[in-house]
Amino acid sequence: MARLIGFLICLIILQYSCSSLNSIIVSKENRYKSLPPGRLVCPESRLKTNKKVIALTFDACGGRGACGYDKELIDYLKNEKIKATLFLNIRWIKKNRSAFNDLVSNPLFQIENHGLKHKPASINGASMYGVRGTSNIRELVEEVEISARIFKEYGARKPKYFRSGTAWYDETSIRIIESMGYKILNFDTNSHDFDKTKTATEISEKILKAKEGSIVIMHMNHPGRNTAEALKLAVPQLREMGYKFVKINEYRVQTSY
Image 1 (spheres, rainbow, N blue to C red):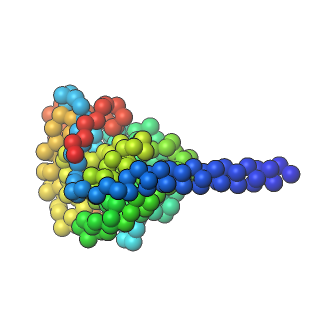
Image 2 (cartoon, rainbow, N blue to C red):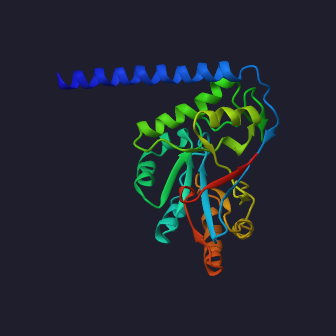
Image 3 (cartoon, one colour):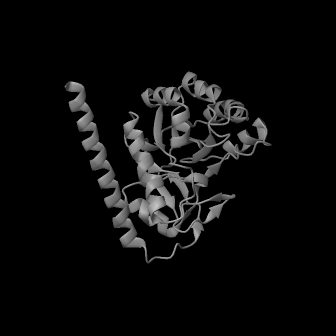
């Protein structure tokens, strides 16, 4: 009997969740359907501070060939007690549930939303780097909101920040995402570690361009590349220069569109 009651409760919650999501989608479609997409932009995000702090952020993009887990990189962050913000795609989480649970439980890490299918944020399917964006408002809302709900379903808190696939957005998608209560979080320092031809030295040189309040983007889903080694080169130098590493939620963020 107890199991039956539990099952019925789950059905009620699921029905309410689907109804709530559909209500959000309809609301956004009606509100924004007459607007043009606007230009594609890659916003710049920085911490609003002059202190010598840097926010390291790591994307896990998911999908074919992109669901790896750079354990060496994460172990280095743990061993060195380096705070970081991790943007996780749902496809990556589903392939790495044990690692996800470990990351969620570690206070060093802030876990945020990298989308459902890692698509650029668009209302008309605009592409970036050969990756086709969300094709309409409904798909955009699903990319953001369904992924956020799965985070909660899997035991994490609901994300506050969203970074789209490729970190590009059209202007209307930005308005929609913000009207849903999420904050777009990009970066001002690109490590270029997504480029598999980059050496550890080249990546570390990009990281070392960070300044007070910089947000650095890197990746944690390609263990065969040089991100971990690059970080091992850059971190001691940054610390020597007096920098500390923080999570996004420790400071206010300024994002320029």
